[in-house]
Length: 127
Ligand SMILES: Cc1cc2nc3c(=O)[nH]c(=O)nc-3n(C[C@H](O)[C@H](O)[C@H](O)COP(=O)(O)OP(=O)(O)OC[C@H]3O[C@@H](n4cnc5c(N)ncnc54)[C@H](O)[C@@H]3O)c2cc1C
Image (cartoon, rainbow, N blue to C red; front, side):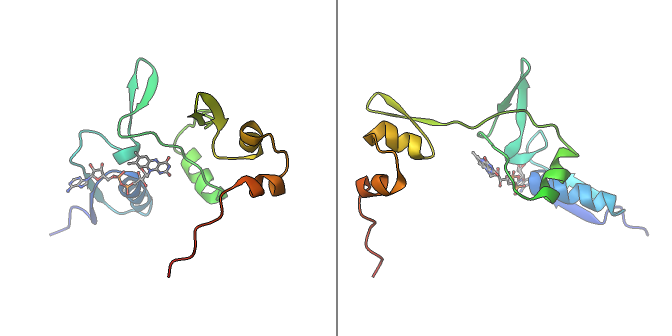
């Protein structure tokens, strides 16, 4: 009797979906099951009135690995989202993550050595 599938993949998140895709490319037969009604696991987005809404939490994809980037962009299109978080501290807005702009806005300092002097001392190493 011939087997129906080479792999049963439980979960269609990033891992399961990529594994299934690669296995299919390698000529394997795969079955993917998921307890949720859609594919993608935690990176699933729901299109609501033309807007991709992150159902399980916001996601930002970043990699410095060209092989990874070439792989994902061969499958999906990315939008031009730019992550620019701000912190509201005592009614003033500051850039996150901290950079010299933040330290200038906070303390009026313009060089890393002067900013470093403003920072609290590091905690003692664990004993
Ligand atoms: C709120 C949030 C924000 C995040 N932000 C980022 C980010 O900005 N950048 C980043 O790189 N990573 C981010 N991550 C991490 C990233 O989402 C995960 O690393 C990645 O999605 C994990 O993929 P996965 O395939 O391992 O698991 P999941 O995406 O969790 O997929 C697992 C799938 O398996 C299914 N499943 C589980 N158990 C069963 C079962 N018994 N039977 C059937 N199906 C089952 C689930 O329904 C789900 O669809 C974030 C995670 C969260 C939760």
